[in-house]
Image 1: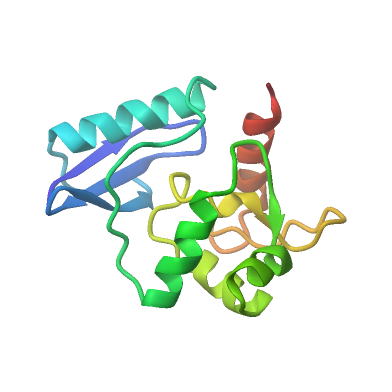
Image 2: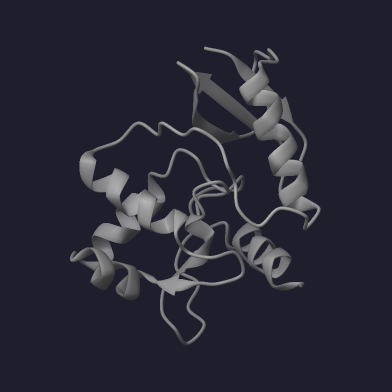
Length: 152
C-alpha cells in the first residue's frame, strides 16, 4: 500500500492509500514513502488546512471499520469547521449512546480529515479524549486543532 509521510504542526503524519482511497492517517513517520496523485492531494489539502485555507476536505476515504463506526465517522464529517458537538449530541443524532460515540472516535483511522477532534466530552468545556501523537489522552493536540479552527 502506498504511503506518504509529512511534517505537520501537530507532529509527523503518515498517509496510507488503498484502491484509490485514503484508509488511514497515522501519527508518526512511516517506513515507506511513495507519492501517488491521491497522497499528494491529501498532503496538499492537509497543508492548506493547517494554513487556515481549507475548511472541508474533498478526498475519497475508505476507513476500515464496522457499519456502525462508518455511520459515526460520516456524521463527524458533517460537523462544520470551527464547530463542535458533544458525545451526547452526536449520539442523539445517530440514535446511540455517548459511550459508543467515544469508541468510534477512539478508533478513527483517519483523524484530522474525519474530525473526531470536534467531538467534546460535554458542552461545559469537557474535552473528552483524543488519540493524538502523544497517545489516548492527547488533549494538547485536540486543543491545538480546535484553536486553529476558531482563529478565523
